[in-house]
Amino acid sequence: MPQLEQIAMHVKELGFTVYEAKTYVSLLQNSPVTRYELSKNSGVPRSAIYSVIKQLENLGAVNALYSHPEKYIPLPPEQLFKLLENRLKERIGKAMEGLKGIESNLMADHLWNIVGYQNMIHKAREIIQNSQKEIYLSAWRREIDHFKDDLRNARSRGVKITIFAFTEIDCKADYLFTYNLPEEELAKFWAHKIILVADKKELLMGEADEKLPKKTAWTTNKAIVDIATNHLILDITLSGLRLNLDVNEAVKNMMNRGSDRLDEMLQEKYPSNQLINLQELGGELDKINNNGNEK
Image (cartoon, rainbow, N blue to C red):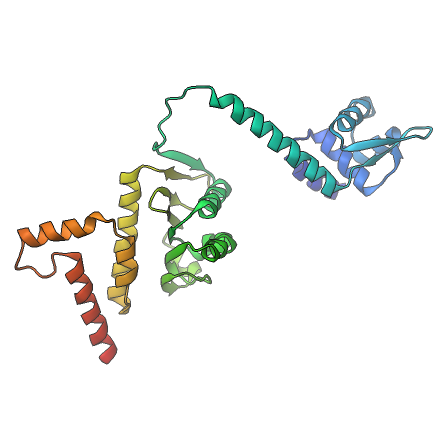
């Protein structure tokens, strides 16, 4: 019975009541059976089993056999999932069609809260799956492992991926920078965090806490996306200085087009300062790296 209860709770998440879920799982374990046997096996009260069976029949999840007394069998899980999927798609389509005619003043670039760890993971996967050109990601191994397949699929369709991490990670990327610190040791004094930028248009950022229902922020606000991207650029640049890594190409790719004009203005304002613009800074980073390698 404990196993039935546990499986039934998962089935309940598909939109069934507790009694409906218990009845369906019980039928999978033992069928064909009568309503009396089903009530006894599932733990659903006899006073409720008739209406539960009728509802499951209406949903197409259960069929009655032509026997006396009447016995019931369940729709195989694969067919049930397909049935539920098609019905959900149909309902979503109707809802979308109905909502199209409603004018809304919602701000598309509002800062939205994503509450809970699993919701954060789902949103991150959705962002990665919908990415078209570039992904910038700063995260710990625990979180990156959730996205590994999505990141691999993104690379296979031509999305350029840049990853920065403090922890050891096992993931391929076009640009990968990590301090390779042991995750368990780091977690003793530092919380898991995530910054995910897609196509320089969409951002997911915040604390990635498995135990507490923390909030992560999701937005398409350009200013906030740029700030988060610049934070990643700083982390990558510092890792290049600390570890003698060549980060120049990755950083240039992450910068906005306006950076070139900014360089020109800074050079005009401070002509004698060679480190004032990003191009010169990149050259100095190369010199530092080369000197470190020679030593």
